[in-house]
Image: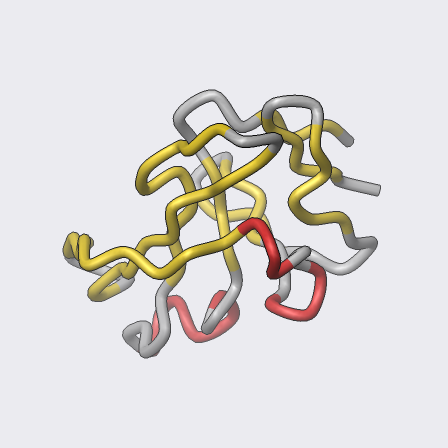
Length: 94
């Protein structure tokens, strides 16, 4: 089961997930929400659409924009609507 961790803290874990471009996208209900703060950052992918970001907080430390998701993806990426992926030092283990 994939588990996302940062700074020794589990951020998300789920047996249900999607893999896109080598990234594991966790369903929204698998997040430990207390570690996520909305960010004002947005980026655009030509085939997935506009991504929004979360800043991750764990054990007193902050990792800006370390998680991203597509709230309204284009139809080609409909399977990851609202799912969250990670980078910036967040490890995802299977």
